[in-house]
Image 1: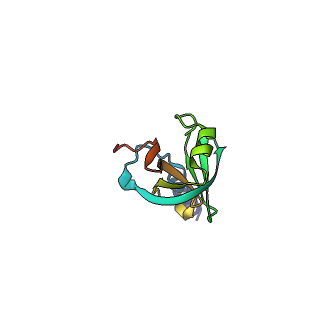
Image 2: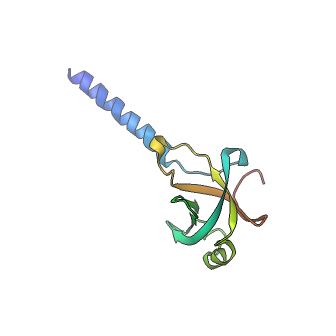
Image 3: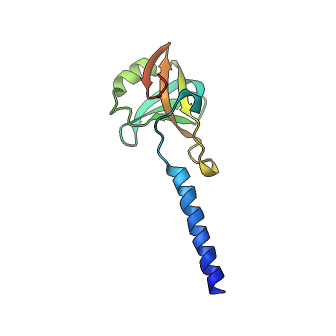
Length: 125
């Protein structure tokens, strides 16, 4: 009986570890084929996390973010001036997360406004 309990506990721990790996794996080296293209009007831009550029979307409680975007060439004040109130094209990483984690907070790999690419980290440039 103790062997069955130990085996079950071991399998449960292994399953939890695997789920956590998928839930918190980093997003890098993404191609446009791995993205969903979404168009939204930006209502607000702010800094979140560690130097992330975070975008609030009109008529939606979803936020989109560029990971460490403020470290990689984006300027918060310029984004507010150039992006707020405009329709933007977001290349959102189609990254599966268990249990629907982070469905309201999605990673952006390319941002286009008025046909100009403001940010791009896709590998198929």
